[in-house]
Every structure is written in C-alpha cells, then in structure tokens.
Image (cartoon, rainbow, N blue to C red):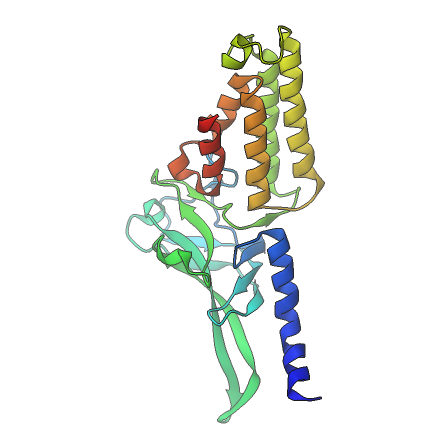
Length: 273
C-alpha cells in the first residue's frame, strides 16, 4: 500500500463520524451518545433534563457514557468513559456555582522504552469551565448552570432514546398540557379574532392534535437536543395559535429564556407569536 492509501484508511473513521454528525446536527463539533449525565434529582421545572444536584456535596458526579467529540486537531473520535466520574465543584458554592461542566479529549502519544508508535491514547477529561471557554469546538458541554443557584441544564448536546427518563418526564408534561387543552374555556386573542371560526371544539382539536403529533415524534426514535427543541418550538406555535392557555403553560414549564439553555429558542419563539 502506498502512503495515500494509508492516509485514506486512517481517515475513514473521521469521514464516517463527520457525515453522521453533520446529518444529525449540522454545525456542532460533538455530541453525547449515551450517559455522561450529571447526577441529581430531576428539577421540578425548567428545560427537559434539568437536574438539581446535591447542594451539600463537595463533588459533582457524572455517570459513565460515550460521546462523539472533535479534537483540537480536527479529528472526530468516539470517547468512552467506562466509570463514574467525580469532580470537585470549582468553588465553595458547590452546585450553586456558575459555569459549564464539560468533557475534553486528552490525546497522548503511545510508546515504551523510548519508542513511539503511530497510534494515540485518547481519554475524556471531565471538569468545569467558564461559559465563554466552553464554546471551544474541542470542548463538549455536559451541563450548564441555570442561574437560580440550584439547577443545571443537561440537555445541551445529547442523543436520548425514547425510554430515557427525561423523555418520559417530557411526555408526562405534554400529557398535562393536553388535559389543559380540553379543560380550557373559550378565550384568548386567537378565539377573539375567530381565526378558526366560532366552534371552540375546533380550536381544542387542533391543539390536541399538535400535542399528540409531538408525542409521536418523541417516542418514535432517538432524538438529538436540536430535534427536541424543534418539536417543542413547533408545538408551542400550534398551541398559541389555537388554545393559548395550553401554549402559555408549556412556556411557563420551561421557564425564563436566560436559563433555558438550548430551549431558549422555544421561549423566545413563543413570546414573538
């Protein structure tokens, strides 16, 4: 084999991983494939997957898992963290600290007795960074502080299976929104303008159809964070265009835009409607 052939073989992994990442989420340099989750109770409100770590603990605990990540040299790699990781909170404030919990690839030469070989040793290092430093393409964010001194957003760049507890919690949230649709009285600016006519059941039918459509997408296949943001953005628009009370409930369950992480797009889009 000539040198060009060897280069082609060595680049196959990067080509395949890059194609998958581009098709799944254009523009991002890495994504959590499974696990690598900040441990703690689920937050009662906030964006999907928001966690409330133990405020008394001196360490953040991250579950085992794997991620697709881009190195500083531009290579795409799958990193596996086989064991639970514990990392000290960066200040005495503990979980109330501001910042981002991240995974960074550490690439090292491999050799023995002074002889280097062609392969590299790659491992993932978990730690905390300031928000501006976490924007580096070689850094994969795992969780970010919401800003209320208690909760952390974890659904930043992830793939979740339909069976994931956070997806199940989101489905339960949509069930509550669906009940609101049928309990709501004829009201709201859309009703007052008679956009869908004078039959209130028609408005409720449109809204409940949107809720069920969102549910079907969430349970059909694994989705990225970007997919879930699109689903909720579309649902919010449909609810605010039919049974506004249900749309407002969905927005309130996510919380303020400044603490919603990627779901900021849902909140801002809802307020612009």
